[in-house]
Length: 349
Image 1 (cartoon, rainbow, N blue to C red):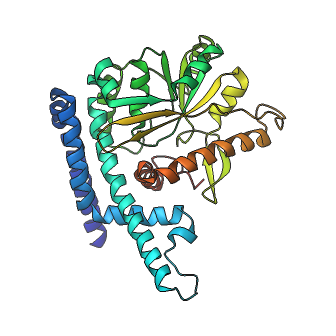
Image 2 (image 1 turned 180 degrees about the vertical axis):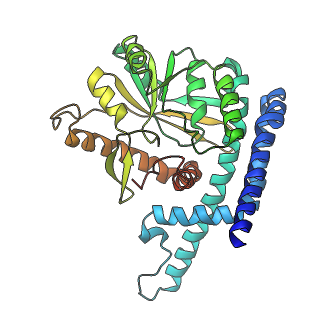
Image 3 (image 1 turned 120 degrees about the vertical axis):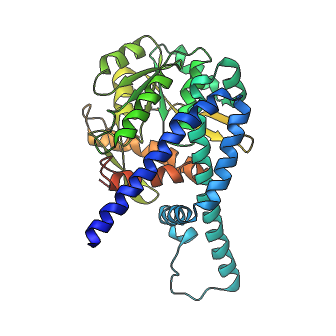
């Protein structure tokens, strides 16, 4: 009887989730695309604020994950056994409050990102210029001057889907390399949403390539001195390199480093940060210098580990600076890995 109740509860839960997805991706999406951009973004901000307060259990889960991610010295849930002074107690309480604020903010930003995704196909050169300011574009121009192609090193940080349209509308030839779609554990509504996204993305000034089908096209794009965007923290793939990430073993995809070493393409770390006014700063960091001294072969583990560790350190620094831009995405990947939708999250192999 208890098994039957559990099955019924799961079925009811799935039905509610499916209904929510349908409402969001069909009627709500159409409404958002009909409205002026500023109003749609305002609705996304308001929805983010409201739901970030309502979803308290989710906020608590994310806060616990953040405490585990960051150093125990700074955000520990457990005392070291020493008796804390009153000042230390105040500091610990403040740190825990800070983590809760970051967790709540991460939910808000994730909802804003999702609403923003709905209106991406409606953007144009003028509207994207109001939405995104580019910093460090001189690195992009210097990379282009080398005539060997540029790899835009992405991560699932902030409103990452906005990066490529912002570059495409500025006139850059942009290609994105993605993994094989993961639909094996999804229901019918997920297939419908996937098809809607596919149609919407086709309207963007970006060419989408699949890692299992289009490696030749990727190499051709680099030879033509185009931009190729690759997410090194993606969760779909066969090859992973272990690195030290927040003092824990973590696993990242070495593909961008391998391609840069093979082709001579410039590897350009790229992040996007939202400010308080629904505006984004698209930030290009200085190019990554590929270390080849320990490279024994294209697949040399020493070569990959040394270079990937540098990328992981850069990524960790950005997360420490803006943890609210990553916390919800980390939580989602952990849940997806537990359900078998992806093979692993960053920390589990």
